[in-house]
Amino acid sequence: MKVILASDHGGINLSKEIASLLEELQVEYEDIGCNCADSVDYPDYGIPAAERVANGEFDRGILICGTGIGMSIAANKVKGIRAALVHDLFSAKATREHNDSNMITMGERVIGPGLAREIVRTWLGTEFEGGRHQNRIGKVADYENK
Ligand code: RB5
Figure 1 (tube, rainbow, N blue to C red):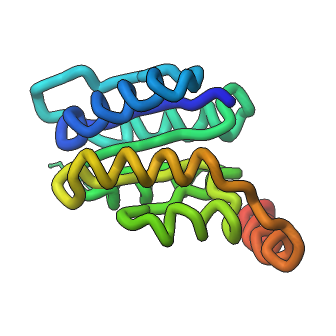
Figure 2 (cartoon, rainbow, N blue to C red):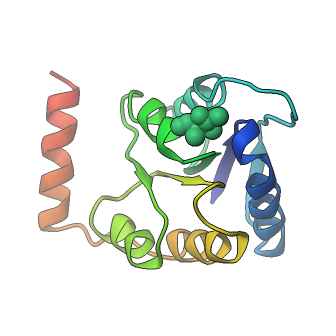
């Protein structure tokens, strides 16, 4: 599995934590930044990351900003992206089983590194259930492709 990781300045510390987790898990990943202390705009990182998941270059993406909200809004504008804003373990599992989410977004100002690491472990390790859920995400895709 190939994962792309991106953050804005508000997510930089948590992003480094997740990068070290991906190394521990021996998951292939690319960190596209920002590696910055200065203020940047989350769409400048979230949208390019989402495009690289949508075009198949990466299987999954992890986006981090202050709240996770801006990254989620931006990523979900890219066709084919199902980005879930996740701050708890139940949702991390459910969004893979039910939504086949291909990106998650988290907020560094919302949760701590320990929970964020467990969320990523759970999300990476949970399979999509398909079935009725496939039908539902298919309806979203149909709307997106209209
Ligand atoms: C940056 O201050 C902050 O707005 C950003 O990281 C994010 O939380 C936006 O949704």
